[in-house]
Image (cartoon, rainbow, N blue to C red):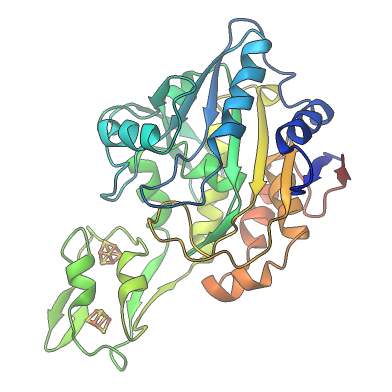
Length: 341
Ligand code: SF4
Ligand code: SF4
């Protein structure tokens, strides 16, 4: 059994010291060897979003990697839609503005998402593009913020691997496993969806919205802005399966002992850190988890929380990505042993 280690979010304690005890118990940095180039995979937060992982925790992780003789670098991949992390220049500016200056920030897929390699995987996807700096790293510490997600239910370590370690082409491959439908009985033709869409979709035909273009990215932008809730995703379980496939592909580029995971369950918003407006937290702060399995660490978070709220918000069962990850061979448990430190 792959245990998950946990410290509660107890503000009566020094949480950096609590995290230190957690990492020691979990062996978070034990796979790092002198001279390793170590990717610290994180999400630096969209500009304006206040709920990403606090930089002082990342600073501490960087110090621990340096203590092991590793060469840590912060990394993430560019977004597939136009926000402040869409190219390396804007992404690096956002990282600095959000406080991530404690190590070099290397955008994993290059200036305009041109740096990646194709890796075979299993499940709903047979192959996936992996961002170049991730594929080339010797080791990786995956630092994730646990929160809800509009399409996949929630985002933790699996999603950080899957969407976060793949370039635009990889993200599109995952998103395009779902479909979008517009309920014409609810659509009033207002055009709000078209105004907010980065691709100027959908067409408004005879006073009703209609998506006919292959360019559609199946992102949550138009859905979240539609005033009548006329837009819905269908086959959402497919993107959960795609997350598992992509995560497996990313992990194929590492030796298993070279990847470890830290999940922060604080400021648990209904929407993800990619949005400048993720919404108010819907669950109380829980704590910090550490493990050697992305499956077990995410399952441990769900086990500690009322994830039915996420299910209701996104219309998908959060466990789907976890069970699919196990089905296709990522080691881990749906009900892991959680050791409180
Ligand atoms: S925003 Fe909603 S109601 Fe308005 S045109 Fe688009 S789908 Fe129809
Ligand atoms: S999902 Fe909506 S906002 Fe995103 S590209 Fe398609 S039509 Fe545009």
